[in-house]
Amino acid sequence: MSELDSIIIETREQPDAAVIWLHGLGADGNDFVPIVEQLQLPSHYAIRFIFPHAPLRPITINQGYQMPGWYDISSLSIVEQEDEAGIRESSAILKALCEEQEANGIDSRRIVLAGFSQGGAIALHCGCRYPKPLAGIMALSTYLPLPDTLADEVSDFASEIPVFMAHGRQDNVVAYEYGKQSMEQLEAFDIEVHWHEYDMEHSVCIEEIQHIRQWLTEIL
Image (cartoon, rainbow, N blue to C red; front, side, top):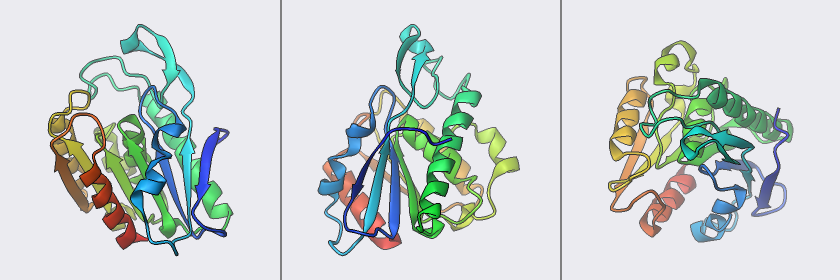
């Protein structure tokens, strides 16, 4: 299932933790590679960073133009007319990537699912349903997809997984309100959300990277 090309960066030999980081629509795995250095995590941490490239798919809102995407977007209001098949397909790919890390000797409790925008939506969808405890879920400038299906599908371990959510107050791609609403939807399932908001648009800022470093250091 996870026959996706990925960029893999290991901070030390024999990693005992993994961070699987999904990019946003139209980008690719290279998008977040620079963050490994920017995070300046403690040098004794042995982490495998995995940056998968999303498959090419036609995106309705871009006149059907093909670009790397985790699922289709057909409306400016991204929470309407959701591409359930695409979301579930990419969530299954992420689950397979996690299982691959477990097969390579990394405990599920040492795996972080991370993503920006569309990638963050998949991290939330997969992480809340993953059948084992995870180290954490990092969801940047994003929202919870298919919220109405979560009650029937939420994992027994979801309430044990810390979630880091960050959003720009001036986000004109994924509205700030969608992020806030998603936080409340997650909290309704007793999921612990560490919420951060910043004066920025649909991007990542220095202050946010510092908060991510702090959070990763705590959970790993």
